[in-house]
Image (cartoon, rainbow, N blue to C red; front, side, top):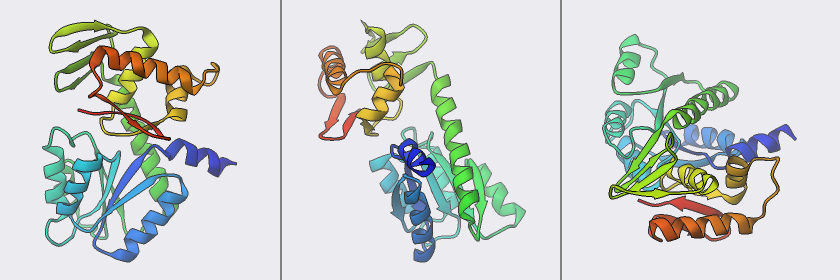
Length: 234
């Protein structure tokens, strides 16, 4: 039962594993998928950046020593990109030299996990890092996405500097989707985060709120993934 609960909590979370060793990729992928995470794979830093731009994962697990582009350079590029810089980057490395860790943190890495990888430690560190991500999102008072600005303190939304007012639930739903552009939020997750467990509402409730948001912002910003849920599109 505990495993099922963990899987449900993690099913909206996407992790990109970057390593040029196939056996390590498969080992990490197996353990992450068992916990309910969606897993993406890349063989080097350059490939990781391409995939990250298309999918915007919640976290990147990346080896340091790789061909084409090593982890240090890839991390530096990710952290200097406005679209990618908030993604957590955790280095996987067998190198224990102090200079390697310093170089990694200087490039913007958020944490280090040493090889050989122990599954329980890996999963524990990932959960701790993703909790930090949730806290960062909660603390952000404003989200700026192109012409759209969402101000959590005033519960106001601006489009091209024009103020738009939203009822509380519409605002919370919009804020949730906009907190991770491109990420698909399932109906179950939306219900839990916006309405909570103590309020009984149906799928139709979400559809009505989405329709009202689209009427105010336009259809281009809220995308539908049939049978799954919704996402914010820039």
